Amino acid sequence: MPRAKITFLAATLVALTSVPAGAQSPAEARVLAGLNVLRAGGISCPGLGRRPVAAPLRASGEHALAARMQAGYLGGSGRITHTGVNGSTPRVRAASTGVRAVSVTEIIYLGAGLSPAGAVGWWRGSAVHCAVLTDPRYTHAGAAVVQGSRGTAYVVVLSSEPR
Image 1 (spheres, helix red, strand yellow):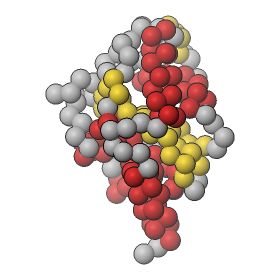
Image 2: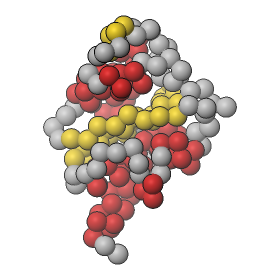
Image 3: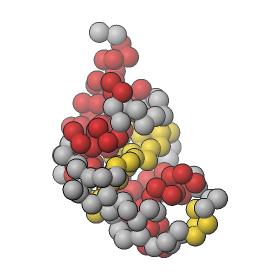
């Protein structure tokens, strides 16, 4: 098995087993709390102007597990992408953990030396990420913060109401 594949598989295993599926680490809780502060404020997004106030995101263990899958991949591979193992998409990863919703998306960040507040701030400063995190159609979310060999990955999987 190629070394890169072994490294990726090891990183994914660590990501999936480091926090129980229904639990959040303190860093993951801070990410969701930060997003909810922005949603409650009706903030301005770059190039989009003032966004409406949105209800708080409800934390979901299924969403968090889907986020951990991608965070493990990002942290182990060093790639910044929404495409995961074997070409998986956010919707496919979320469905594989039990998320059943009309709308599913994710926001990602990979880097070194950034706190949960820093990742939230980075997303707020990006027009496309800010639009997603303030979109009132998204009501459920799960966050993952995974330290990998290639950096710390922050991933949030968001969805609309379950079907």
